[in-house]
Image (tube, one colour):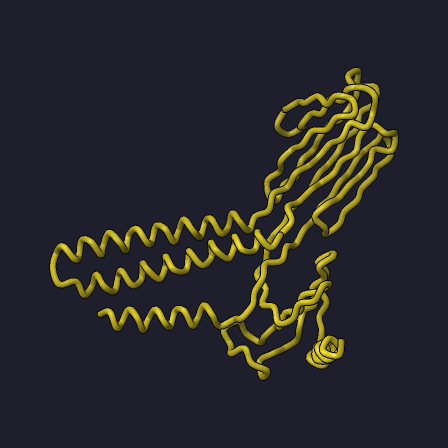
Length: 260
């Protein structure tokens, strides 16, 4: 029985180690919209920060989305690995339970299998949480008077003192509509905030200071060899733009880097 567990464990380890280097890269979307009477201001981008100022100097709005740091990538990988080993433990527990020689062994191994299965679910949920990035909306009162901020959907109201700031945490993704005015409602502004993000796992064949290069294969489960390689994706570290490259272009880049 121990020999079977060892063989299956080695197979599991080899599968996990098939791809030498991976990382997690974010995709962002941010949108801000301010209505000032008959005028409308709107901006959008695919970065982790977006700002828009009210034209008469009442306030400044900023969307801050969590950055994917090296520590964040490590945390996601730890959760994924823990989930994988817990799943493996549950499978092997089920195998060993089937070979139990007496009722006591059966009970112990059944309890182990059940616990490992529950842990795998917990770690899977934890990995999802790690891959969901926080979104914060900042409203800076840039005027000399108080501002009243009303959430038009939830019916909540906040006050911002002169030259002070407040923050709102959004869900991912989320949309928020706010009414911002002075206390007497002489100047009323309506704002719309849209934001969302996701984190995608990429296989990385080459990394430079400015880009990641990821190979794209014909099928996910196909052997990752040159026969099944379709092209490469170059991902910018500055704005996460994705550009498709053919094999020849990628080889030229590798050659140029070796010459440096």
